[in-house]
Length: 142
Image (cartoon, rainbow, N blue to C red; front, side, top):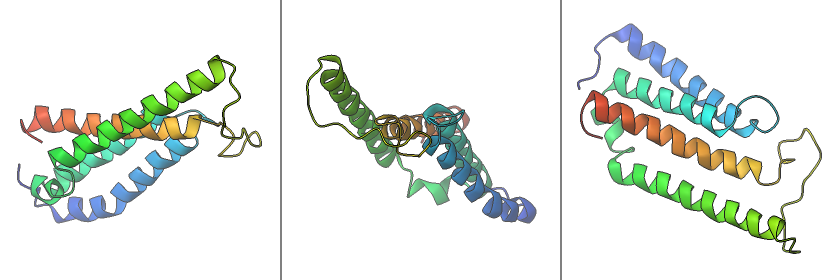
């Protein structure tokens, strides 16, 4: 699709899209302390990518978010999630005294042990999946 040639929409998009993405990152990072998490934050970031593609067109975003880069992001996040979750199952479930991430002070961002890295990887997977599904249904290609 071609970009929308509405100057007001483009200028508002330049202002509001970064704030939407920052809010999605906030939801991902503080998901283990408040309502939210990787899925909710990833959905917000995916919606901001969809808005960016609608406002500025597919040609402007294709050089950064092409198919290869999207697949590398999603596969890397899934592999990281699997390794970290498998390690936490082995080290915690088998009662082995392997090195662990410290628990930290309750209420701080680093107090959830494995929850923050897992939320980040889930957020990446959800954001990329939402964006890919939109582009496939809207234009038929990524």
